[in-house]
Length: 252
Image (cartoon, rainbow, N blue to C red; front, side):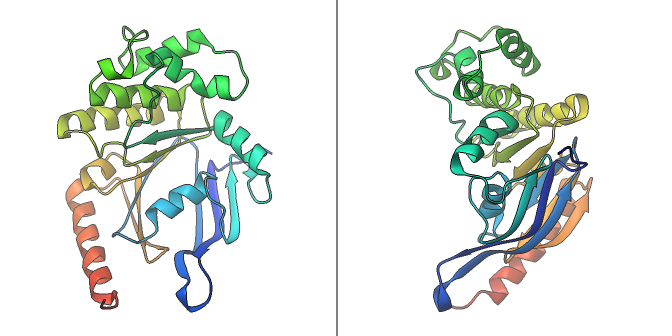
């Protein structure tokens, strides 16, 4: 069913373990993100950022609650159907690039199409390569590229199937400041010109400042948000949350 929302989380809880030793990574997250938006997710260490991303992307199943992507309820889907959905309707960008070294740039980009059982669309591949500024690098191997160029390839791969949502996990964590800004500008452009929907986990206030909205997690819940905020405001809020988390954390 078509949906007005790209991503919906309804009462999403994720618990690891049982009884007194159980760890509550997420505690009843309610959230709806519209298409064509760029959302950053931040929080102190242990706040639930990675678990949030994994549950929202269908990589991990919540203990309770529902996740809906582009109108498709992931609750109860088989692993095979979840895998098929991830290959065709989701894009992923990781800190470590996750390119296959034995494949060319073009082959890495069309890999989601091959894994989904579709014939690679070389015209679409060339289109996204040009979009990320690597039109002349199609036949190169990842080892022949800089870190920033490899992340550009990863972005092209994430966008090639025109997914409902692109999930980015610390996409600039391994890059210098200048290269990171170039990568974030590409993500911003994908939102502004192609109506892509991006959800990015980051620890960097400068990266989060590129987003439309920054969500702050603490102890598995969304405790605050900022819209179109400068890096200084985001950093100040993160400092407050980190201080609060340190003060409330039990002594070892």
